[in-house]
Image (cartoon, rainbow, N blue to C red):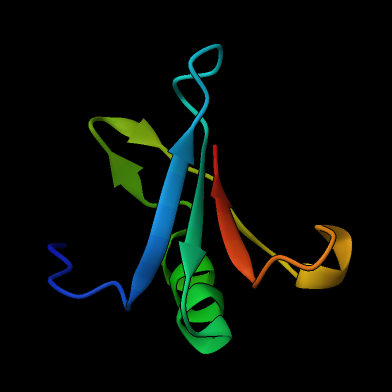
Length: 69
């Protein structure tokens, strides 16, 4: 499956000590929720990925984001 549009992404953070993890910040919570649901369990570069949506209340005021591990 090739996905051409993921939604509007504000920014992305990849920790240097955990290169297999990323935080992706979407402008719209609905985009984050949709991507988390549709990409969880997908295969990327031959590896199965786990994608979870995290609400802003758990992140100290940040917009809904998607954590990919």
